[in-house]
Length: 340
Figure (cartoon, rainbow, N blue to C red):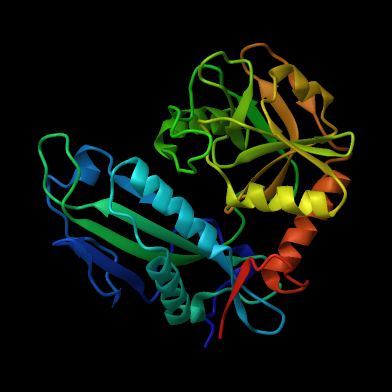
């Protein structure tokens, strides 16, 4: 039976649910997936995740459709990205089949926590992979723990699908470059916390980063990828240092489907003044339109949209993506996994 919660007003924060799923890699193999109702992890004080940052996480969502079926959006893409991240920092990757099975199990066992259709909320799914073996020298762990927890959440930004204001922080970088152009890995969000705090204190919803080398090109927002739209073209930054967003990848596909040109390239700072629409996109943010960008160093202000409303292309892309995620439209790309 679905839990009795104020689904329409859920914040985006952790909430305890019934179960999480776990497995441990040791002695050269992964153990079976196990259900747990504990919120804690027994861990050695010399675990490599604590000392050397051997840690990776993912984020994806499950939705209840009008037909009552639960749909998970693109879990295979998250599995592949976590494998790439694990390999880059020399962790034991979670096999794709195991990852997908764990996602299905944890959603099924917590189906009472999946928000109902029409509530605007979803079940956030957080896979976590950490090095738990004891090491003092800089070396990879000999033991890893894989966990998936879930929590029902509302919109990441309290404004929902309404334009937000963003501040450019030239003094801080989201993260050092990770990987190469063809290796899709995750990043370290802790590096963005100081900028996000400064933005919030200034009354802005998020921070926007320039490239760490030259400060000439747009990289991404703190919690999400950046995109701009002009001249019937969807433009999003290409950079080695930003998270390869699965949502952004999906929007590139949908933009082409709708007749837009798609460009993934370096986006110079000066181009901000030419966009007709701008926004952030990601699993948590979905599509969040940007109404204003403020450069705290130069005083430059860039505005988008009219009367505080999302731009027409942003709205079309948002509606198309949500329709596929909730099962209101056909899924021609095989993105959705249905939990029976």
